[in-house]
Length: 335
Image (tube, rainbow, N blue to C red; front, side, top):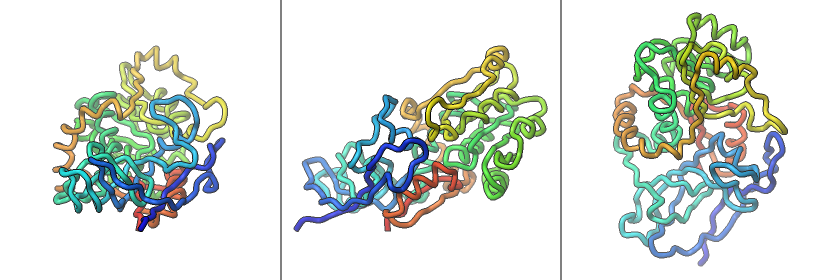
């Protein structure tokens, strides 16, 4: 008897802000396994801002999503059928073959996970690519040194909520974050250990950043771009470092995106602005996990999750993360 599963498909390439009508929940048969493959029943799906770029049919560091096909993304689940001797039935794994109820995954693309010390969802957030992004940003791209003043934009998101804490561990003397709304600003200080937080929806960012860091900032971990990148450059000390991690404020813009108007100021201050793709830093993953798992286990690395229930609500969760609806990692619990 043929078994069926549900998948999230992209129907249209959105212009501007995506809508739920651009997606569909589709029922398809589960294919038979080939040698070496496993069938995973996904318990948790990850939705992330970078997915917006994959909805466009333009050249980039990762291929666009195909129309009328299951969307890719990180997921965690259980092997329920196996033709791979190293991944028997019952193994918990993470992989990149979501967003769907069930995934057929080549064995070499499924990573067994150990949830004896930490939750399995951690492997989609602080122990996944978002955590690795934060770690690479503060250790390699814009390294934080003892005594540095650090500013993080999008600080309540999956990357930013970890980046501020890692900056502190690297020796930062002061960590300032920006986020949208009173609840997120409160979470930055109370949950994630930021010294101060700026509500970009209610406050003037350049003015407030100058108040909080009157002598300037040394490191800026930027997840937002646009006006916040401009504010960071404006308050940067000479020889400061900027990790250009993301530009979520610009992902839905049609036509030319609005960029900072003070790039020459960065030049005169001899500031380093360096872009980053987490795919270029997977070599750091063993080092990162070796440090981060104990921090999570003892509670010294604090995280939060925003959970949406039901695979049928995956597109709503994705639109939510693009609009800043999450604190910490946005996850979909499939059932």
